[in-house]
Length: 119
Image (cartoon, rainbow, N blue to C red; front, top):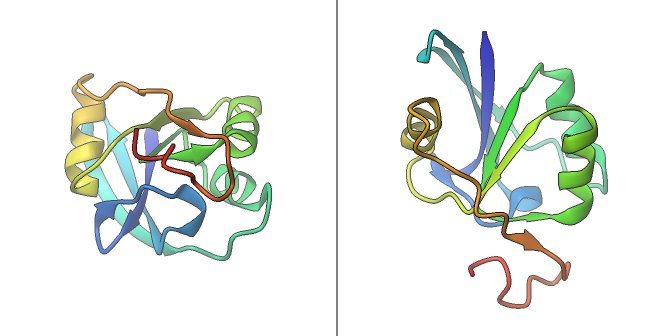
């Protein structure tokens, strides 16, 4: 089983990982989504969200943009980070399962997101 979390706002992939409204978590088996669960964002504190998602058993995180510190924690926990995604959260998860969604590696270096998240 693979668990994919998508940082989202109203079911759409968010550009700012830490400030998303919720995480849509897809449980998958044999590349098929078997269960979907929505977890409210419990709050943005440095280093908190990657650990929170790891505790939920997440294997992959999909977001539009993400700060380098969060990426580093996910990497330490062997959670695959896909950034540069956009659109519908469930379509993003399905694209990932088909091998069509690849990370663009767009990491936000400025916490103020000076135009870097969207590039």
